[in-house]
Image (cartoon, rainbow, N blue to C red; front, side, top):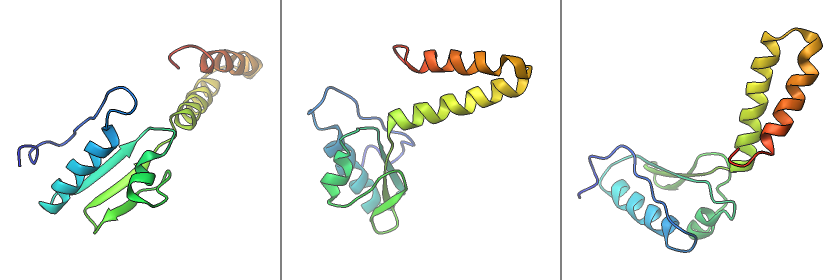
Length: 115
């Protein structure tokens, strides 16, 4: 199989073009060749779980033996968690009287395009 030497494979494109289907098909084929595979989806519609007919969510869930697993990340939640972690780090480096300004800055940053 041509892809067995790859460590990372990304499937991208517009909605409805078969990214989840292709990722699952390639992942299953690789698992059948003995490779350990983790399919990570950032689709808020959780189409990976629908395809495999099981709830996957934000915990690694095995889909085929112990070689193929899936994980559905919520990009909104991940971004908010990241901003909270960064804000906490910044607060720890700032004087206490500026903590409110740090919070205000990150509230605006979260709502910015591309965040």
